[in-house]
Picture: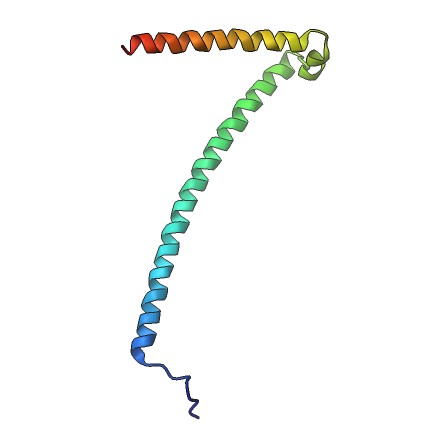
Length: 102
């Protein structure tokens, strides 16, 4: 049975096939790039988790409860002091780098 409008010229089918093939290739390249990015993100995440597990291990081993420690009077002032000292240290390092680069 002939159905008008259902038959398409071979050139249209070839062009559509080439378009689909090109689109598939583009998507394969995109998927490959995303897989590489995923592996990199997983590696960074695993490294971060390992660092935090190491810190938690030593805190547990030394029987340090950070929550209890931070609830004590003066804890927020002590953290502010540490931030100030770190800020001074960073400023010193930055100045030293700027002077060395000249």
